[in-house]
Length: 104
Length: 208
Image (cartoon, rainbow over all chains, first blue to last red):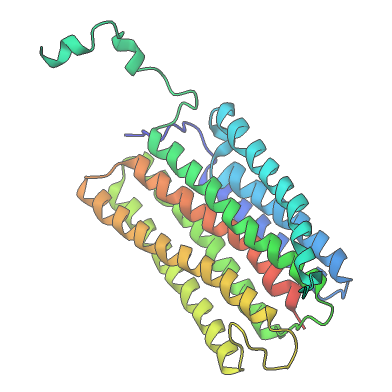
């Protein structure tokens, strides 16, 4: 009995194809690594590709595409907000490296 | 006064209200767990990325053999995601033994991933890398970030293998249903998803 709440999902052939696409993206990541780009540029490229891979995995492997839109609207914006806030708050924590002990 | 009289005034339909997400509670619980775990990984990866960019003479220890090992580990994990989907597909068609077989294959792939991971750790430790020790004399931060991030991920892999084993055994006995197979599958896909960030950020960013 199917009590998963998800009725129609991709077939196994499509899943294998997606797996192949994800492996190709990993191949692109390795290729970019040996192009000797600057650290910042490489980080930006790798993050964009990793987010693309994550989007495919969440949408098709984790079946978020086939769930109620309410679920995606509850989870994804909240996660993006937290990630955005971390990106804003963490640079402030780097000040610790420049702090000095003051002897009165 | 007996129990039913206490509930006077409460419409029975109130208790059977449809979930706004139209999914079983256990699946919603797994999604919420995944969300909180994603934030945990995001926090350590953010911290690592900032420290990595802020340290000028960061050590890049990974030779081509380690990157190849990382690609093999990624392939193993991606294939294990597909076998998890095969297990769910079989469960939805009420083919219990086929579903359990695919769950077993997923477990084997998870154990292979863990073995490759531990082999990489042993290689690093043999070279003198420790949590707070850099054998090349550079900043010690690489060792601490590498072992913490990959260690946390490895713990998730081991927990996933144990969870899949428990679900497979109970599902084969008939005490769990398709929903449980899907929930453990969701967790496994999440572990795979996290590796899609760990591999490029920790391995590729530190390739020689």
